[in-house]
Length: 309
Image (cartoon, rainbow, N blue to C red; front, side, top):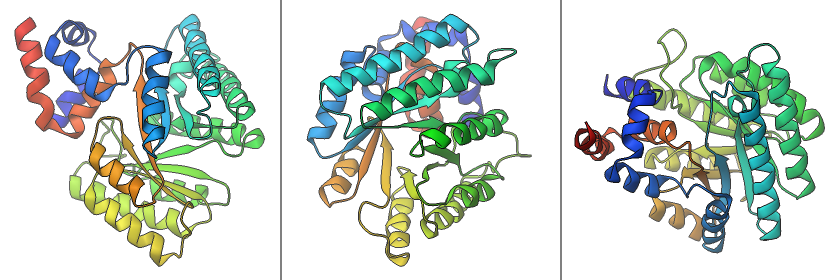
């Protein structure tokens, strides 16, 4: 119930404004978000790369219903990639893109615009020696996002996909994507979904994650295990051994600011460990979804809201 409330709050403009002005909320933003500017993102990336970790960067924002805003988001990614190239970081850093941020949700030609803008980002990334991953959003966008993925992979085959294990359809999607050259980030899922399309019980979601992970580890693609759960990290490592995967044929991924010591431990022992680094001014929805994943952090935001209420 609490998770559902938090996920609903992630779309509240009123609560977003309250949280923006509250110092306790800003403290949480500083923990989970690299900053608001391109320079902030590059600086955070440089530090992580120096520590032996890899990076994927998300320019925050989604559900864009304004064409000019979608264009600004595309341009922000292009500028980010140029900055990463100038800093010599594109060998260790890629970008993650939410299609709804670059026009997918626009009425009429939204899917076409989203593909066009994502193509521009993929083209720039490819020219600089890196790639992008298409973030997954709520279940109503899954087919559209996978369709865009197919289009992009025709020209940029390293384009990454994201599968959310809690969706009932995800095992079938993993089978389709577990092919040579396919990069697939497997996460549990962070949106409020109806029981008709998704598992809602934590134990059921964990079991679904393992089933999907087995499919990806047995396949010929490149699995990217996005989880902070120590049990799932251990299971992932065991499945890699069972399937005789070579080092470097899969990676772990964790969020910026979450379990940094474990991130470093995995990197230090020779695993590929990639950190998902968000930046930008549109941090509110992202932050509240992180709270939904770990409601124990809710007290910090609750104090912020009460103090401003």
